[in-house]
Length: 326
Ligand code: SF4
Ligand code: SF4
Image (cartoon, rainbow, N blue to C red; front, side, top):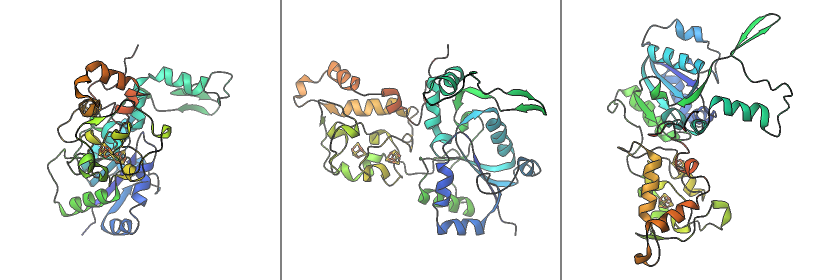
């Protein structure tokens, strides 16, 4: 019997999701034995035409990482959607927009201005910026369109499953691969990760008081962090209350707060708004009578980059989706 065909593709992302496939270690050999990889540009020399010649839905599953930022990415994910029985949005950027999605606070023009003309390390006396078409002696060179707005994968094509995380944890990847190979799949649209919030699995939640009394919000490098205590108790923003578990509390165990890469817990539309409300509801001052909206506002004003803190991975998937254009 033919092995199921599998494709991996990389859109707007850092490449860490591709690394995590290699991190499967010996499990990678089991996957390689069980499937027939038909596209994996980062590792194997397949071309777009190899995908185009496949029949519709001939690929059993495509794992697509990265958000959609360019015309080429949009074309490729639409091509893969047509050729695939299942599409898995693989990693935070495909799932929610991820770090590239923070570009939605700016426009293409302001990004090009900064990147190609203003950064201190740039040497560009003619102020050249990328063009979709450039005429040279030998003909015309083309680049894909760079969109104003970064989109999540499901804002571009329909998605069957989501594997969250920056990058997705290897055990969740193997669970997903096994479920696909055995056909024991949950309902379409499911996030293939536990439903509990990270605080529910966090080793620091045991001693966490019901009401957290902080007078000052700090950044991790500004204090000596207690490796046992809840970060919020130490005045450090941790998105554990608003974030799905399943990552093995990777950052917490490395003494860093959660930034929210596993995405929102089930039923939450806007992870950033949920983070603000969860943390606001936990905050209090030592004297309960004194807590007021002004006190909470004062505490939140101490957060260095509120939009980047609460929407670090999820701006394109949020209710706002982006900053205002124009
Ligand atoms: S807020 Fe962060 S450190 Fe505190 S219990 Fe939740 S995940 Fe753990
Ligand atoms: S602790 Fe938070 S940011 Fe770190 S891997 Fe887990 S979900 Fe992602």
